[in-house]
Image (cartoon, rainbow, N blue to C red; front, side, top):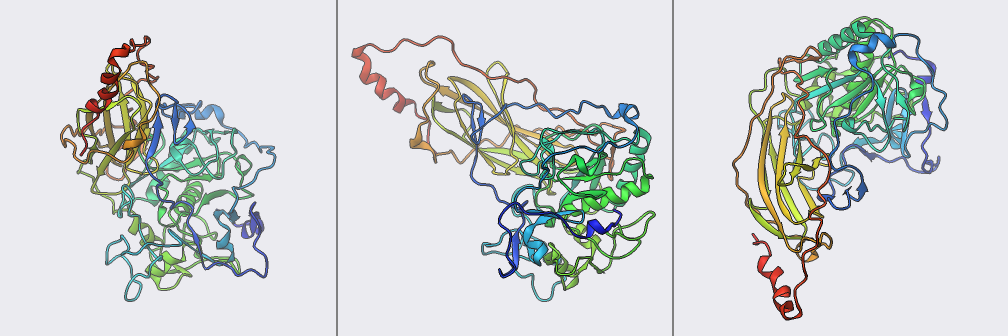
Length: 535
């Protein structure tokens, strides 16, 4: 992006208590995108809640009101939004075009865990040039499923805008820490032909790696991807003046970050330089010197990602948030090797010929539960590259989908409550970055009084069967040709939907007769006899 005097200073202040001049600056700060999962995803079907939040349990894929093919109708000058009280989330500040934790501007290094657990870093032994060994907290990698190195990835260029909201970074749900909640983000005003040219230029920038660039249709929610909002104006976000802005995410822990490029009518090459720089910020790259570098404020023309240890650019007194990654490749934190940093996270370009797999490890197929009991569902997803995503789908006996939830937290476990009496199909679905899809299904039976849909049996919260049938894996990979996708391997975004249908099952509308007084003993014993078999 272009350098201006204002972009070289902090443009938004932290909302939390300011660090006083006498206070010691922290040496490390937590990467806000590297928060580990906290227990299972809890879904209450009767209450319609996910982790206590009331929302639809079956959500449709997000569609913009503007179609990509209609971009020409939105060509024109950029409108400046007259926003009110636009502020970044507490604890984050803007440094140039980067959104970082407050401590970074005081020289702190961003790490995945400020209190790391013992263990070896989860990266290949030959991936780091740091002398002797990689110190803890320098280049830790992501040990959770779906985050393994190397990964395959997708960049979704959103030219059509849409309704965004704050509440963390989740590209699939239009959530961004820089968003103006409730504000309709405008579409790209440069027209369809220019949008295609920008996309092609961005793909060229990332061509060395297994990172595809797509723009129409949008990837499914199931798939982790970085979303770049291309168009609009900085006033359409909570950021300050800039031609682009992005959250810094060392090692791309989040995988679902949202960044912005406020370029609309500039030449495609210039726009691609901005888009690619903002995307690279979400991978952890920072600014460097060098007129030919994408990560530089200097120069122009068709820039590149550097392949040498280049001096980083920082205002006096500020730190480089991802200096640990830089140390890994260059020995010191003030030098950055663009290609080496991206190359650890993402695999080299090439086809992906191995389909993923998924298994519901518990409960067992055919397990019987009493109405009101908790059902713990374990998932075992796998692929030969990181960057895959998975979800749980629950259907009733009529095929109606009651639950269709992505495991955004990568918790690998769901806790289901509130299912009425009936027979259900539980399906785990996984998708990789080459549009390969696999599924595994089991049957779960809920028994008991059809009138009783409440009451969680807290006696069995931790009892989940540990063995499941391993069959029913379905490789439903798609290689449909789609002119709206640019793929390094020819695997283009299919945009295929998941099992459809929405709504909930209220169970039987009529209450069963209660037992006579003479039958109370049998009534009390019955739940024990029907309790599901433990592992």
